[in-house]
Image (cartoon, rainbow, N blue to C red):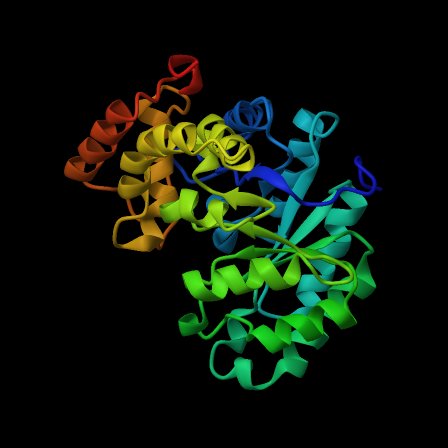
Length: 320
């Protein structure tokens, strides 16, 4: 059973990282410590595990179950846990969803199956069948992960509307459309449906602009490092305080530029290195095909953290 019944995904939701030992096994103690660092930031509404940020693509089913169980044991009585459902097959996705519900997750973040990348956008019934199978496995609220259309994994606008109608447990989308015009259309349309569907931005490289369009929240890997700045920015935008929002965004800018530089796939690798630089993690080990960053890039991350005045303790104490 979920620890937080009737959870509705909104607000600031960091996606946490996975700490690894030198042999690439999971460092459970360090992972739990990192989880607390994110979950206990004042203003955070939930935390996500088993997502992109925690290298879910390289974790087995049993490892994902262990990560969720450890996370619930560490902070499950304090914040809702969103668990990723990452699988290329719908049967496996439903199995993951059922496991997460049984363990006590409060919400599921559903990734698009990579198997749909070669034309699945032309077969909306595939996406609907995938979500229905997951919804049949659990009544937990679902967050649909919307990818860029150019990836082949984004759902067309009309497909999303059909999904919301036919799978009523979809409560939000994690919007990575990477298209400002489409993103605004999502916000204006989905959040004003008869049964509203929240838009959680993950456009962390242009977060202030995205939030200013009216998103109900954000779900971001960068929250693993700068959750306090994200909370402050979200609140400032919600309050209509443009001057304060701009000042906070000026702090976020160098970090976002460092994290989301090409190649984009290294973003969470860079976040691990940032936590090591800040003294919040002991090591920045990643599982292949991800690879260790160069010394030059680590130096760029260090410079960005210093420019943003991010410290081991956080950032907002400096902006109080």
